[in-house]
Image (cartoon, rainbow, N blue to C red; front, side, top):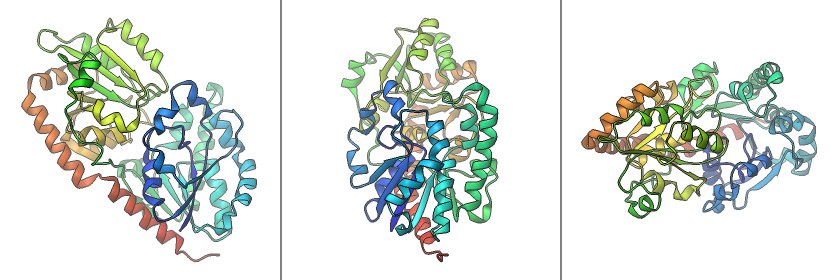
Length: 398
């Protein structure tokens, strides 16, 4: 198949995500062209080259075009995509494609889907987040414009849902929250590379990071607006160091590194919190292996409530116990295989319990690994998406 992808993320400048895995799988047997946002601004927050290091093969042979090369906000890039995409679509001969994969786009995705539909080419809408909520909370959006943008985002989302031949979504909880039509909605969950993410011994890295005699709480990922490390710092501040000499390892920087460094200092934890910045994705399993407990410290809001972060499965695949904010998406995905904490006090109690019970940590890790192997490999998820795209491509042309 010739597959045209519209994407709300820039694959060359974004942390490893769901679409990277889709492309990795699909490019083996299909011709892929991607039209995406230009995330030029991320270079000011992190070393975007580290995102791609070791993953260059994923995008090999994939034709990637930006909506615009102008250095403007991604919000405005979406807004003007209706005008810019017409020329690009003509240049790539869009009518020669077999199917359109709309990856979490709003205005741009709909603009392309409408043109493709007119040419008799079907679209599959992949929904990985609560997109209208993300528009309303985006730091790229001026506060005064957020209410209007939220309503426009809601309208664009509904139009994408209506025009799509099939909708794929990460979880039932997100599908229910967004009121997606069951008749054309399929669950294609997030997953994990179970060969890359394997528990391992990392004594040299622990020593390099100054963690060799510490009980390590860890977080991996971007530090965007939905991540809240303050309860973690408050919990660590309140621990009895004679019983649990804890340190916090934060791997990632995009969005709020300086803010969180200042926060750690305010809690008197400058020597107990290690910020590594961005590391290449292929090295993440080694950093996860330095952790005794892995954390999902998300704010409870519309964006995070139904999220099922990739890091959840990656932690579990590395045989690590996980403490998460109680989110509907996480509960539905893994149930009681992780521990939940609603605030700093509860988090502190859960950390102490796991710190004192090594057997419990080991058992949670082993059970988590088995569960991930059986339910959340990327191979299964990507194969299912490929089947759905193939079915859509076989639809009758207008």
